[in-house]
Length: 198
Length: 198
DNA sequence: TTATAAATGACCGACCATCAGTCATTAAAA
DNA sequence: TTTTAATGACTGATGGTCGGTCATTTATAA
Image (cartoon, rainbow over all chains, first blue to last red; front, side, top):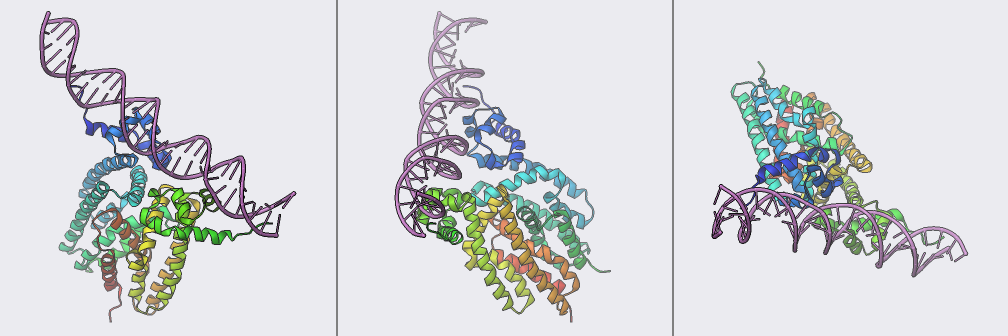
């Protein structure tokens, strides 16, 4: 027998060692050779751990999003107001702390649109469902406590998805400048309609 | 002088002659040689009319969207109900007639995300503003005629952008299956809150 | 216990095929 | 003869492969 490396861990290490150059250059402006050099390994070794160049971005985003989910979970449980909880879900699309992940997520979405891949879609679906479950629970709780009207539930999916639309529009146009303000004002306006009047 | 070709027209012709293969294969699975062969011209000629491969997609989408805008304009003016007008804006993201344009638009967004280009962003911004103006006008008209409450105006941008979010989510996840239903039910729910009660 | 051989997984970079984009040349019209 | 259009052979770059090397561990036997 010979050396046995922790393939999963090494894959993570390679991916993470490249996250800065991916963020700075974008996948299209990076060569496998550069990536391998940055990771301090041979070009061939890349393909012992990744299916292709896209797969590296996927791994980075995968790791970073899973880390972020944990942070988000604690942040949500530490937030009292329903409205603030809702806003917290959208914060990914504008907060300074998430700037790098957001940049890499952008690359990831670009890949997912032009080269849809079973695994990527599965991961995205899981993320969507996870977030959405929390989101739904938050809204339902607010309904049950009499804070907002029952009809609010119908806005769950739309409200949840709208932030993604703002994000894409902010990247693809100059029409959306301040994502935070747009999200905040939309949520505020909706809450005014949905709050139970005393 | 020698033969003078209408550069603008020829660019259009080349672009449109390739729209089917772009829709079927996607930009990543097409080579310039294939494109040139499909257009019935030499490889080098492509570069007399386009800056690069991305630029061809841009031209196709550009032409098709501008055509669609005209159709949309007449469709809107032929639609009476405010709610139907609003829904009309979202129809791009699910209607059968727009399936091909939608597929090419997806490619275009993918390009715009990973290789942002001045011209593309400018075009997208113009489209956004054009649609949004109509959209805003529709809402304002409904407010002035006493159909919906004044606060409705605050939902303009969010409502407008939410359909794009649905679209992206439907492509990147398996969590959104029926875009039309999602858009319809969100718009319906919002209208219930916003309609002036008699 | 130590020396040697065998086995195996990790790692690598030269190599290959492909392809976007260029440019020297040709063709055709005026 | 000049100008414009068109072209496809060519080039440089790059994603991905593959045969081979190296390092470590295990087996064996002296």
